Image (tube, rainbow over all chains, first blue to last red; front, side, top):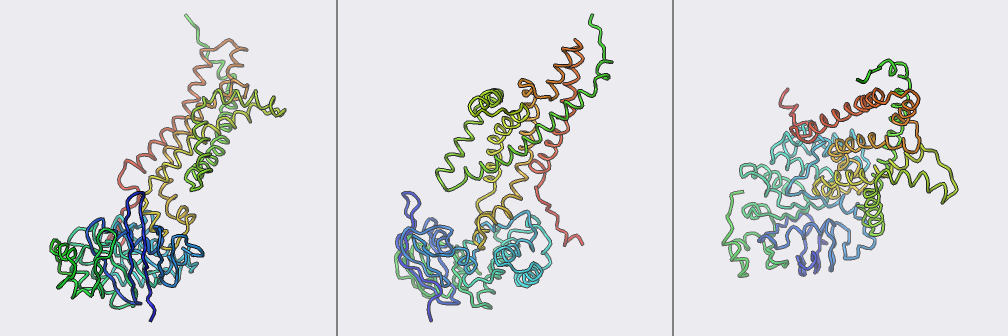
Amino acid sequence: MNPKLSVKNIYKCFGSVSVLNGVSFEAMPGEVVAVIGPSGAGKTTLLRCLNGLNNIDAGDIQIAGFNITSKNINLDIIKLREKVGMVFQQFNLWPHKTVLENIVLAPVTVENIPRKQAEEKAYIFLKRVGLENKAKSYPAALSGGQQQRVAIARALAMEPDVILFDEITSALDPELVAEVLEVVKEIATEHSKTMVIVTHEMGFAKNVADRVIFMDRGLIIEQAPPDEIFTSPQEERTQKFLKRVVFTKY
Amino acid sequence: MYEWNWQIIWTYKQIFVEGALVTLGLTLVAVVIGTLIGALMAALKRSSNLVLSFLAKFYIEIFRALPILVLLIWIYYVIPILFNWQISGFTAAVVAIALHLSAFSAETIRAGIESIPSGQFESGYALGMNSRQVMIFIVLPQAIKNMIPNLLGLYVNELKNSSLASIIAVNELLHRSNILISNTYRPLEIYTTIALVYLILILPLIYLTKSLEKKFIKGAPPFRAVDYESQT
């Protein structure tokens, strides 16, 4: 089986600050990869390079059949993003649109799906995140956890092959974290979607990921199945980091 | 003691009505053209093409800096000589006001767009939308609410500036009144009346601007934060 995602030796700097210093990893179809590490390790930048929100300076990414390079010759970024979904830390729902409109906008405008059909599909995904009764609400009327679940439904509605989760619980009140992670866990088990999850919730990473990648200062320090990395990390930096973080029950 | 004669105003009321209509028409045409050019300049200034962006910036700086009266006179007297093309006072006034407004409205429109957080753009891009779709469906509907009160403020200013067109004999409110004064020798009544006419034209606009500002900016959330489902 070919990997769904293959990152080879990518580099990225912002001005004089180098954020990614030669990162390589792979993910097989249906695999859930969690990326952990201290702030400033380059986790979010790595994720944003995978759907072209940031360009890479060097290296090569194969993702969902697309090839991202520093030059991006012949890359159809629109088609790539249809296949690679993303959920953001700040939800980024559109406040002037209802929940339903948030979900159908991209299927209708990008994929030209008839609105009625898109809405029917949207209800299926809303049901999956447990919010089918909020379809007509505006985002401002929802809690942070509900908003993030809508954002997940919005990403799912494009039926992507790969979904990128960027610290999706970092902006939430502690009591709302569980409902969002529960939804992600369900999607991970029910669907065979490839997922890359940047997270600070170690318990969640342990629970849901097939493999955990530890990053620090723009490099992958260690990657292993969660049982191994959390119980017997090989690298000193991984050990130091895991000693400092708090484990949650998710 | 000055003897007021308000009868004269009633006699020549037609002049004020027609003058006000020309003032309004002049402003309206200039506002439409100026806002369209302003939107274009805002788009160019935000362009990733450095040359276009620089040209738009240059344009905006020039027309923000030039006094509108100088612009007006220059257009009216210089263009016919340079290009051997006689333009009417009305056209010259429309062009001058539109150019002046375009520079200011460009900045207002740009600021309105840039007031939308980058996450709003990015969530659109991440779903495969192109920049035109993101602008039309996501950014502008939100940004326009921020822009409208400021744009209306600019329009009110240009309505006032349109009185400068009397200098080049455009038949607007002030110019007609000046002619009337030279015929009737009743400056106090007539100047008082045109002041009132300007107030009648402008005060509703100022009130509208203020109430929109309250609705869009200062008031509670700009979007309906009503949970219809949980109410039923």
